[in-house]
Figure 1 (cartoon, rainbow, N blue to C red):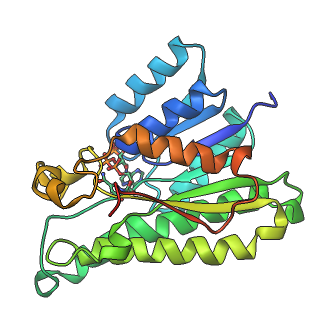
Figure 2 (spheres, rainbow, N blue to C red):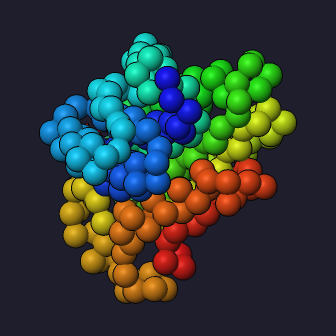
Length: 250
Ligand code: NAP
């Protein structure tokens, strides 16, 4: 086993997670690229990292499923070493809808994928990182959304509320483990160019909203990755329970 730092990034096959995995690998982390079902882009990213001399593995696991989260973390224990950074990034969106048209099935799917998953991964990370349990500390960065502040009316209040829960999780857990060598912070991206808007039923959504963003543009996944990386690094060593908004002024 090496002494290099190990980062688990959930939902890292595409979008913000992929950019984040690339940046951590470029900075010497051994990286676990987790994905749910699309192995193609995850394996392609892993190849790219390995060709450049980086160390990484891909692990298929649905992070809303407790057994699969346990398997994800034990695979990393065995193949890369103990996790030092967890980036909770995997998330889903359903098509735009008003609340009165939402079924319980849809709401529960959003909540399990966007909230339960973060709780389960935090649990496994804390068990390994906490210096009260023999660990050497670590950092957790949660990816929330500007939607937790806007509420996303007429589009997806369920998604926005799930991100509100992630803000509260960040606050609570950061305080719970502050004296155990673990920092917990959060980024809240605004409109970022990824596939997610297609899942919401409007691939060109950013173009519709652009004029309302003070900076008059959408963001790139790499701009979110840089903030995540800073929050995970020693450069933010006295920061915990904090929120970094990456939304062009929204
Ligand atoms: P994306 O391009 O749609 O990619 C989502 C990734 O998450 C994919 O790799 C997907 O795996 C994975 N995933 C989804 N559910 C999963 C599960 N249950 N288990 C494991 N992996 C799962 O999304 P993105 O835009 O990069 O979003 C990343 C995060 O940023 C999300 O939490 C999202 O809410 C947040 N965010 C995005 C924006 C934005 O404008 N894009 C704004 C604010 C916040 P597969 O590839 O296998 O499907």
